Amino acid sequence: MVELLASFHFSKPVWLWALLLCVPVALWLVLARHLLVNRNQRIQQYADAHLLPHLLGHSEASSHTQWLRFARWTAMWTLLVLAMAGPRWDFTDVQLFRPGTNLVVLFDISRSMNVADVQPTRLARARQELEDLLNENRGIRVGLIGFASVAHVVSPVTEDMNGIRRVLSALDTSLVQLQGSRPSFALQRASELIAGQPEDSVSSLLIITDGDFDEQGLEERMKELAAAGIRVHILGVGTQEGDAVPGRGRESPWIMNRSGQPVISSLNEPLLKSMAKSGNGIYLRADYRGSDTREILARVKAQALPKGERNERTRVWNERFYWLAGLALVLLLPLFRRTLPEYRPRNT
Image 1 (cartoon, rainbow, N blue to C red):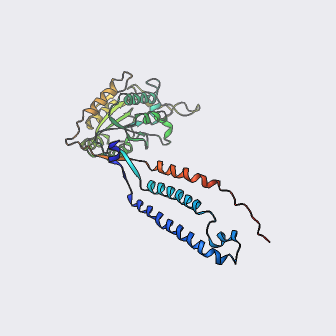
Image 2 (image 1 turned 90 degrees about the vertical axis):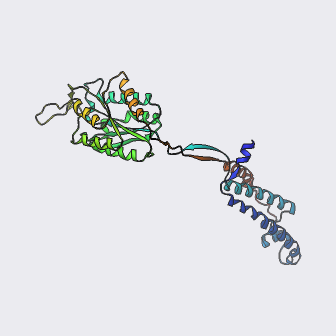
Image 3 (image 1 turned 60 degrees about the horizontal axis):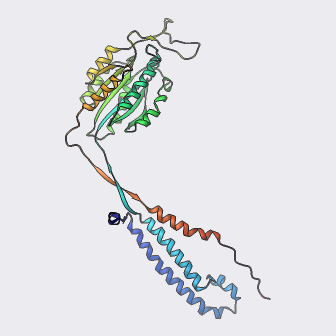
């Protein structure tokens, strides 16, 4: 209790000057009552007594009633002014710009991920791998980008693993209309997400894909990221034998090439291994055992934080103005039950 009283203060104390308004209002009430008594006798010859309050702009209530109304108004005004001044007495210390470890996952949602060379499909296997990674994760902030011919940020870098789990079902090849697999756009978006993190953080990328890409020069892009301190790990999904790429609809069960044969997509393991090596990371083939995701998390955590870790904190005060505002509203409620004054006909 003593600590609460010691920390009590107003965030905007300048509002307390408004309490002085009660003094001129009280003076006006006294002077108005005095003038009304002195002028009543002279004005009665021009109007009836029950009309004088309306003529002079004064209430016909007794002095006792008027002072009770003034006391109620003063109480409401005081409560509202104190609420505007922002009373607060307890707080929470929050850490700002905490450096740590970030992992941005680039999830392939191109049409080749519908291939069923691993059961039930590459896409379903990749979703399971990502869910395993989220379940095993402790202390790593994770972001998620889905990519095919274009890239979509599904989740920014966050500590909320449950939020990412809720959007896993939305990762589907139907999210993109233009097919193909161009990871360069996803790499650019990932760089933008990482740039918004504390500069003392350590960041890594994880690409979950079958390696069926439509562009060249990816190894050079991995080297650029590694030079910037961003390691690139790759989790391959599929088999080297591959299978036909499913089409859409019953009329075209498979995607056909120019010669009229089904397009076969296979896991491009040599390319993915080369990309991981250029990105100073590791390559693993996805399986159901969970050891692959644990190995990737271990590699990500192994990246040591720079020396001189910052620990900036800020004090967030808990505002308590609503208590005073609520009391003022309680005092205000009786004013909504005013009754009309009784009609008294003028004597003839």
